[in-house]
Length: 94
Figure 1: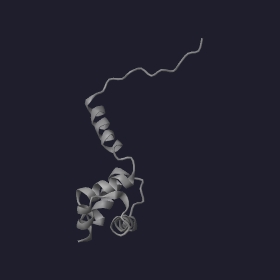
Figure 2: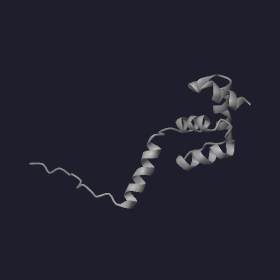
Figure 3: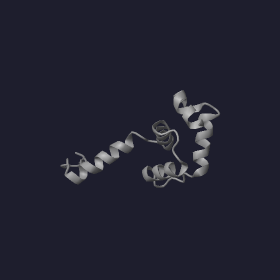
Figure 4: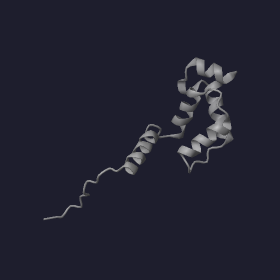
């Protein structure tokens, strides 16, 4: 008969629950693109510096930089990609 390696259930302490909450927040944003779009929806006039800081906070190994910020803005404003509401796009233009 084979032995199976089953992990014993562990209890969740206060520190573990905080870590789990943080992971749950990040789990809603699985990609940098989804985070960038969420940030533009929340504040269409977000500065590149703010966005870079927020992306690097959630994705520390990312090489997100000014050129990426500019590329996303161009794709949204000029090419109409990502289907953001027109109110967000017009606010980004102004």
